[in-house]
Length: 207
Image 1: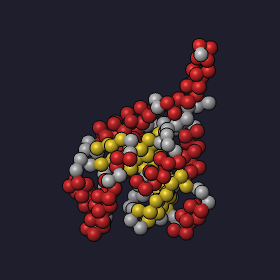
Image 2: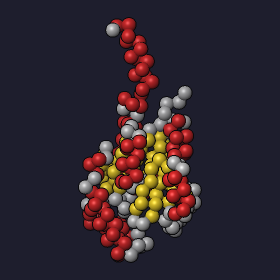
Image 3: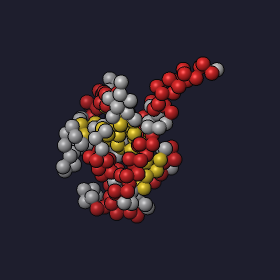
């Protein structure tokens, strides 16, 4: 039986670059699986159905909530986002490390339901850089950028609930650091329950 995978949650301020980081680490490591989220927001240019997100109506999303199909869900800037449960369970049981790129509200739900999950928060080096990245997207109005900055201010008060803080100043270093954190999480006692049980059984003769 394969060792179970680890559940990794990656969150961050909108514009911090978490999507780019996750995409790069998935491409470089075949044992990582990215859970595709369901959302009610409209696709951005270049995003693909079933790869970037599952794009659904508000009615379909609320049906998924009612049916217990989601690991977590959240409402962010007027749209629903959620993680389908079936894929996550299948990948972890196959020994894959599953990465969830989700908002803070959803991350807190995951930690409640899966205490062993590792929560990582991505941030740029400072607020000015965050605003610069949001503006450089060229896809949102100044009003929306300011709305995202206000949301970031609200989120900053809860970042200490995460296990690790990852500063995205240099992309390659950030990806390397994320890989190290995931690798280290495999050595947590809860990930070696089978080994601990075996050792405990063997030690009984000395008790």
